[in-house]
Length: 404
Image (cartoon, rainbow, N blue to C red; front, side):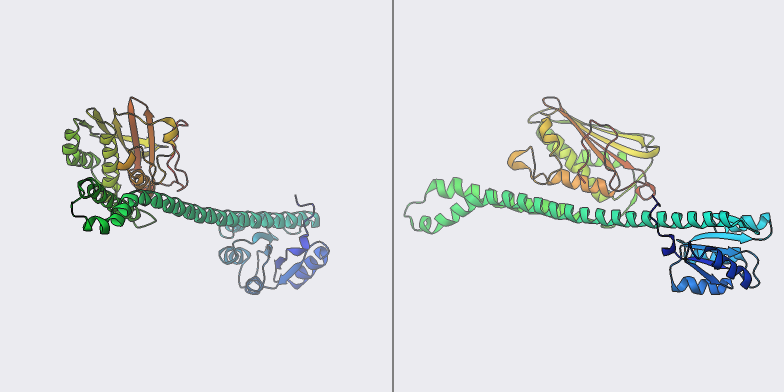
């Protein structure tokens, strides 16, 4: 890959306190490389401050600053420059210092063989070019990821806007009809029972539906973005029990039984308690509403691991109607719902956002006629859990990945 590389385009700096040595290196390699020279480490640092240098070759024995000391400075101030040490004596301590302090990639001895030095300088330039190309590709990758993130945000905004327009336009139809008819209906001698009764009630209901939609949007917005998490150690068993008790009246009103199985060995989990409560609330409500009458919701808390890291797992399973396979892929899409007019699809979107912020995973399995199971896994401490933010997929290929 270096067959067309112009080696003279990448300057080499040779530092030595002997004028004869400086002159010799320049004469020997001037046809192959661009050789810059400096009579001391201090002068060498001045050269490096003025222009980019691919390779630094330094003598070890110099009066004011040794080669290892100079290369250590180069490493700190110009880490991209390839460093090599040239010395006239075989001192193992100098070799060790050169490796540890200057992080040199090559150690050459005097008297040197011209062919060996030429080969070393060529390899040094090639290494410099490879590192530069790697850094450029990395920077381009980061920029591409930023553009994708911006595009995803714009796409998400567009999806939200389209869904919001659709959800609001539907209830606006009866509201608009009621208001358009109002002036004439007020002048009628006999009250129109259908208008002042049924249509009026529909109008009130649709207004409340819009208000509820706005409340849900505000809840979602509250948990959107990179807002700082208020992490604290939380007893997941107690938190799950609290949410089960909180929703027990609603469950009993539908004849639904909610059973909780705690995990006695689970240690406290560092989470934002208020946000995680919202996740439990949404998942439990979904499970209860998935069963028209009767049925069982099972909440199971477990201590588990993901790739060797301790996690807390919460499973919410219902015996409801289940979700068709073609709907599973749309579950985390804004305004997609299987509840008809009773849902907006923002609840699961909020769940995903909160879990994502905690560097967790969410998975759903469902079978029509038999029920649905949502499983959430959260690291015990998300701040010490080293995981790329984009790796949100479950290990099992049959899973539904959380939408990023």
